Length: 160
Image (cartoon, rainbow, N blue to C red; front, side):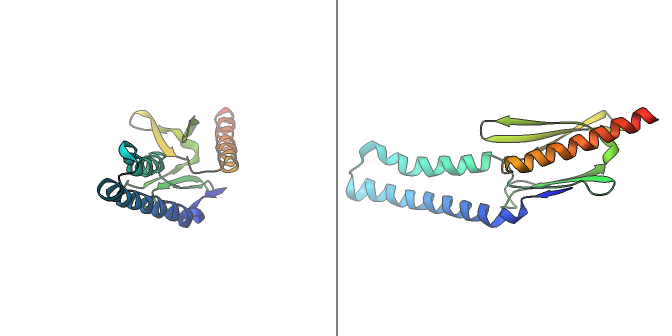
């Protein structure tokens, strides 16, 4: 199964551009308010604080683009930001039989995918992906696919 929200890159880019525009306009309005109009008083700080908070919220939600591929004998996960220099993109590929378990954490605005895989060195490795920008249906499909892989792994280990 393949899952990707890469087709929404232009939407996320537009939102990012719009938020930056609001911040620049807020800074301009702040200085106009401070030195020219002086209508708002101390509330003029909101002209900068609100757009800055929205930008912060947008980036704290994590990497926007998530791709998952379970076709073949390997699982492939990619997680990247629309602005490449902000965060290092994550890309992991490993055989399906190494998947031990997974957990999807839903924290208010943020959603995270934690995957535990078997490893030769420490016995287990934890991989973390940010899936905040996936829809409910995409998360449901991801959960279904990963459960299917885990079920197949358990059946194979019982037969051995």
